[in-house]
Length: 220
Length: 316
Image 1 (cartoon, each protein chain N blue to C red):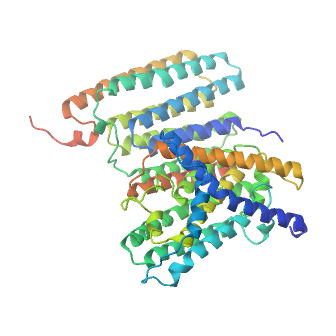
Image 2: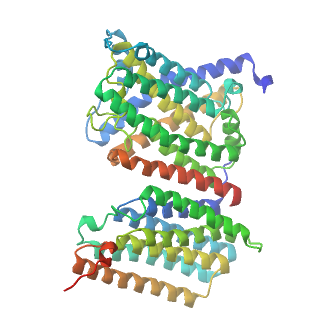
Image 3: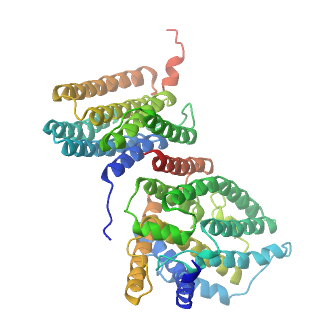
């Protein structure tokens, strides 16, 4: 018997696994690699959606996803963080411990599957596979931004959140118009650059990348 | 079920259990060799574990005066419990004739028995290291076991039951890579690393007191007892690998009793077992041992993974 693949389900599994890699690991390179693989998977998913719906514009969105999210943004990050001390790249003391946040993220995934089940609409196969995944990526991105102290980790959380939104829009609407997609991509790049500059300023001023330090009052 | 219980199948079932028992030290040897080669060492021969066992069996045994019967009985209980567990695991054919006597929970129970006596033996000799190893092992097993049971649950709901033969049979007939089983496989892989004391959890090669877990408990053993303990450790490792292989990548396994398919099943099992051994050895060279109190992080990943797998099965 030939083994068959349920391609959509496997893609959603890969997206979830890479999202969890960000929650479960402590080092910056691990997050960045997880984000890179997630973006490659996301480009693949977009191409699958383009193939299923037959709209050629989505292919361009897939290529843009691959080029910008899997190549450009990681490169920008590597450049920006090149001079940072290693202590600023490792999340040693998050607000919620890593093991608890892994379990809580699993519960967030359960929650997003649950609320997708409650929607009173009938969806096609693509939406069924990717809607809960996109909602859980969104929630986990927010969660990472809330519970982590290091700005690098928070920016990675923001990028995951953005990936979740992109997946949400693409799977639900089968391709919003290309102009909007390009606008969103430029938005993301600008966001990354601004946050990179912000991170450098924080690092320069406080000699640390921990957001916890920003809460202290300084009288100078 | 009882109709299948004929003589040929029983003999084949016993044979495949023997295969696991005999093949076990070889996998350990291959893993050690791969590890040595990736670290730019020549390494011992892949048959070195067999030589070790033969040498240890010929040697005399020293037993502490302070120890009780638990210490002397433990290697035998370990060996018997772990070898009994091999009888329930399908290896070359997708069926184990002793499956009517027990399912995957019995296998875990037998491992629990073996581990319980190992912990007692570690405490029994009243050496400092034994107690240290025992307390660490208890801490680890108490957090690994919930992960195992959630993993078993997510496998059982996909393949319809906790009986290993049923699971392997329906796994061989269902499509490869169902998402639930991907998550369960990640979980089982982490559990195997924890159960067999591989690197992120425990360093199998060390005798440094700060890092030992398993080695600390068996530090007082020598001669035949040590041979039995080493051997049963290898058998446990290959049995868990056989479970991983036959539940998650079962293609090539024989579903009927004919020489050709059984040969194919044997060859594919050996290839897959060696590949998994090499994978684990490579992984061991890439990671350092984690601090003891970071171990729950990995177990949390295993639990979360099984939890997501279960959810996807019901709602996805």
